[in-house]
Length: 400
Image (cartoon, rainbow, N blue to C red; front, side):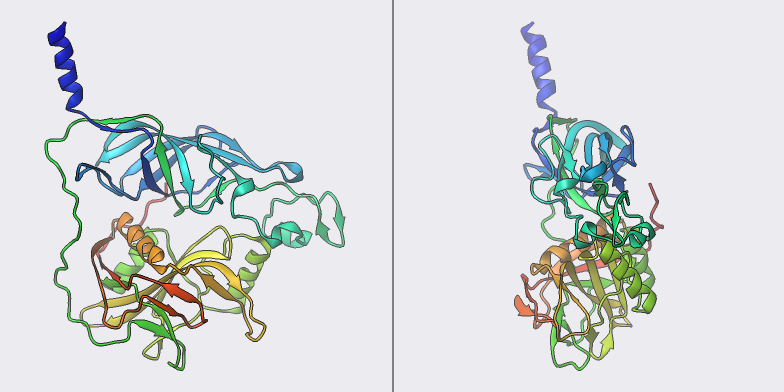
């Protein structure tokens, strides 16, 4: 008996155990809506970080995890909020090699504090999807933009009774899952050491330039260049599209009308125009964005071609988190998240997760700043580093 117990102990000790409570960052690759997506519907996510133990990578980043909807309640009448519960049961530890897990949703990017319970249940009553437009909206506008409104009592053209909002998780939204039980992995034949930095290879010599955008007259400096990309315009476009980012539309009467309608309805403004900024007298060559839950929140990056021979591009990535109204200006301005490094790293992770880009290293461009103001006078802070990403051709993104 002692020999059998010793053999079992040796076998168990050879396994790698990731304790319960471990948090894994994820990115949703599909949209999930409570009430519309039923209980039992499969949910696919992508991990955004590696599982590391004793300086060894046990599970690499950007693998898939599967889960299912266990609670799905749409918004009810008289403002009752929706509820959504997710549980995850499978993790891809290597290509096409899955292991069983037990995990629940732990955090969600666009949810307010307290929206996600310890059991992984999300309530729409504590998400950031609401807005002024949700409170009193003309009935005609509500019908045009598919608002969850019930025109039971209409007074002066306004709907006074409406359905509560469902829980909506957007494609591209990041979050985290938490293991509720230990995850046991078979012992590996080798240890994948944690790579602290990647070597810069074949980095072309950069011309001298001021590493920031500017206004049209060139008198006021704007956002810093925090992403440097190596590749063709086609590779950049395919990489961002594979990551779920879309090209921003040019400003026109139609695009502005759509943005205003989305603002009234407090809905996302897909491919809404971004303001024009300049570099060496040229407006941005490319601009991509990832819509948030409403027009106030979105991720976006403006990109300029720096060197046409070596195909080097510079980009300024920032996240919009609100709207600023100035009476002396003809149009509103988005308020950005002051910690712009978070958006820089978000772009890098999304491009790597798409399988179309690799982070080579971080570098400090000559003249980089760590604290300043942009064209609209908003303050930003940074560590002054620029991420260098090499793009490569990739297949079009698959729709789950």
